[in-house]
Image (cartoon, rainbow, N blue to C red; front, side, top):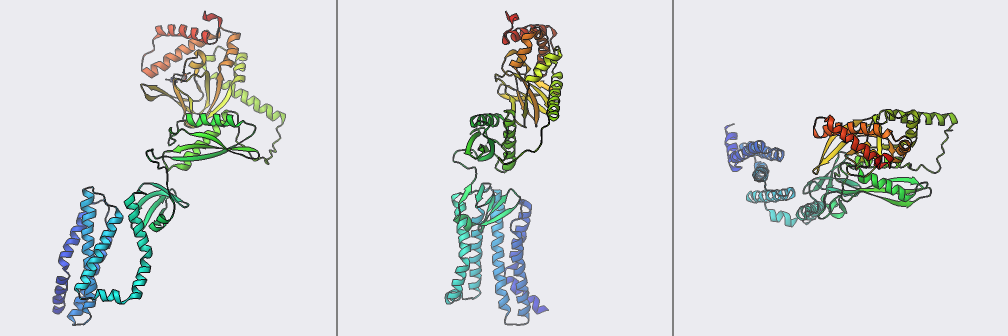
Amino acid sequence: MGDFYEALKGEFSTGRTVWLFALYALTVVLVRALVAKTVRLRALTFFFTMHVVFLLAAAGLNAKESTIAADFRVPGLVFGGVAAVGCIAALLFGVLMSRARVQMPRVLQDVLVAIAALLTSLSVLSRAGVNLSGLIATSAVATAVIGFALQDFMGNLAGGLALQVDNSIEVGDWVKVGDLSGKVLEIRWRYVAIETRNWETVLVPNSVIMKNQVLVLGRRQGQPLQLRRWVYFNVDYRFQPSDVIDAVTTAVRGAKLQRVAADPPPNCVLMELGDSYGKYAVRYWLTDIAVDDPTDSEVRTLVYFALHRAGMRLSIPAQAVFVTQESRERVEDKAKQDRERRRLALTHVDLFNDLSEDERTVLAHGMRYAPFCKGEVITRQGAEAHWLYLVDDGQVSVRVTDQGLEKEVAQLKGPSFFGEMSLMTGEPRSATVVAMGDVECFRLDKETFRKVLTQRPQIAEGVAKVLASRKAELDSARFHLGIDIASRGKTEADLLLKIQKFFGLSGSS
Ligand code: CMP
């Protein structure tokens, strides 16, 4: 037993095991304490443990005076050397440089560590008397085999270095390699790790990256990061291409959609004239490449609503046959329901409280169904537009821009209405109104209201009264003012004059 301890002491002193242990312990403590991520500690622990295990075995054999003790000592020493290199690398790259915020590509760190470990191992081996030059030179076959085996390794290594050095791909870039598309997570000496939108991480060997065409998505010199997307839809030839393009372009440019860049603005193009329909595309620039399909979906919904509002329909396959027989009763039933719905919507507009049943019927007839989807701008502050919206279902946000700052001043939930100021007085829109979700509206235009007003011009007085009180309410909500009864009388008179003038009524003189 005594012999074993003596032998162990000898082995540990040859292997400088105590120093190595101190270095190892220091590295573990510093890395754990100062660096969030544990840096390569597992490999270090493995090499250090192997060092100790082999030296223990060598000591055991030595105590028994076995001749093969050296066969265990030498690998033990090599493991020790590699462990020491690992400790120094972890302290240098993991602790010192990361604390000093000095960046060195990971692949370069790996290569330096590998070279240092190789040189240390060779030096340990040659000091232990192993004839390295003979070993390598005499074995031509081994050299060829190693060369062959290293072919891929060297390809990957060179690829990794090239990628790091010329910055052609950077961590965080969105790339497409073949069918694979995702975000670059890290560039290592052997592979590039790419995270896909499906929550997979794909390790693409650097040599594959170097040999293939790689698309760096959304990157353009001197431009913000944004990717052009194509959203296709078909509309049949009952509708003129120019009308389709107008309706869709206005809708996509006007909407306030997150992740759709304002510059360059979205556009709509006719891509193909098919057998029974035109194939169109909306092209827009996506600002967050991670959220491609959901944003496409929002744009598609927008297209659907825009076409619906313009009385156009997405095409159906030419060979589809509708077998529903529209019976007369069914058609009448539908029309009756629709009339009822419009009438009901009108009862929620206090502007029309004084109107007779017949006058309301005239308005109901002239109202146009206008659905909007989330994010669409229904009225824009400052715009000249002379119609009123009756919100039948859904919710809208009323926003006012003051000194360049947009602020929400109210939310209106159907049944409700807005846009009365411009319809009645012709003034520019006082606010921007945006759909907060799907919103179903009816639109009442100036010409329809004129029909009623010219028949009975006195209506204007009631309208002016309600308009003045609504204006006072809106202003008080907007400017946090009390409602001033005296000034309301004047406002009412002003509004009456404006209405009469706008509709060309005789009282305006
Ligand atoms: P108009 O100016 O025609 O167009 C924008 C509409 O937003 C406006 O009519 C009102 O109907 C509505 N609006 C403006 N300010 C407010 C507010 N503070 N609260 C509610 N609705 C408002």
